[in-house]
Amino acid sequence: MDYISTVNIELTQKGKKPQFCIKDNGRGMDEETISMYFLKAGASYRKSANWAKEFTDKRGNSLVQRSGRFGVGALAAFLLGDTIKVETRRLGAKHGLAFEASINDEQIEIHKIDCNIGTKITIELKKGILKKLNTISRNLFLEEPGFWTNWYKFKTPKITYSMDT
Image (cartoon, rainbow, N blue to C red; front, side, top):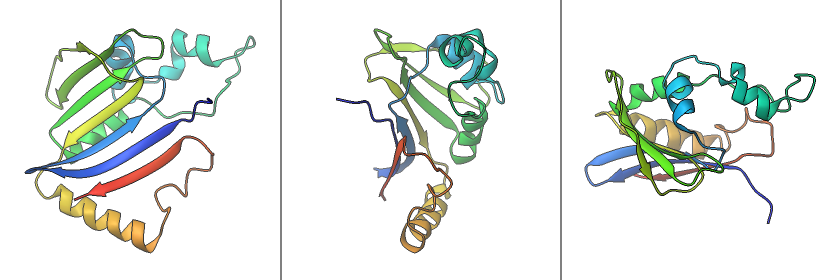
């Protein structure tokens, strides 16, 4: 069976705690990627030796489309909630990693876990954010289907959305 890359975005209400969750089945992260890139706003993984080894040819030309910078999404997550929960497992790793972080944390503790390859980020939403996201999401889904993905011109990853609120 061929690999199909996916990104799932969920907006849910679990009891009294509304959550935003984004999950992919991509390459995942290891401890170095988390500390050196994911948690550093604007850090460029593209400049690392690991990226060059995996994603450039013998001449140093990129084998993949231009990617964004790490840390920007993690920083933006704190606009939605005070804490992010991350579960990730790097392709080829025997175990996954999990941690929680808030914007004011100076240190985080990373735990080993059993999970699938890829990354899952869950944000418990601040008060009032769920209502705003619901309104925006419903308008976009109902009035302009595909609005969130129209900018994305590639066939993969497959992006799915679900709202259970």
